[in-house]
Image 1 (cartoon, rainbow, N blue to C red):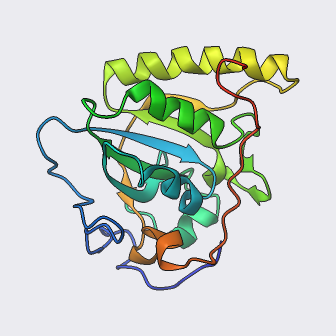
Image 2: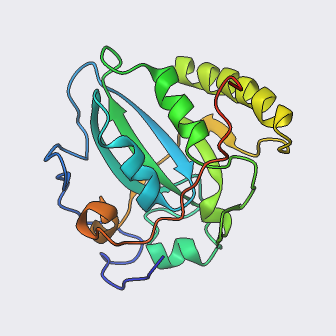
Length: 202
């Protein structure tokens, strides 16, 4: 992924428009009553975000940083590998329209969750697989689907899943140019790739 020096002041809240480039929805809370949010790490967040914004029932998406030790990190700081953050996608959805399990299945099938601190040619702590939940139901279902997908992966010869699954802590929005990057840059890099193993093993 390319680097860009356009950021807000270091270690202060990132200044972004807050409006989704594709669907014109709000990317920052407060969100409408009844919506839920979950955060996925799947490697480079450019391609990961694009997996979800077209889905019916998905209200908005945004990219940012989570599960690290520094408040309001910049992209350069995250890329240093010293902050422990993961590149991640905030997904805000209507559970009455889109099923949480379907979102989790798409998560599992859209990347390789067995690669540890990398995804394809992208290597570093920020490219690890992760699910960061905001409800008890999400946490339980994330672990259940992990166990189910592990069976399919094992049958196909893949090693153990390395995805970290935990309750979400602070999600820090990434710089404006990262938001919906592949819509703004149609020829932009996307290294996202799944294992070709279907959930359930079929």
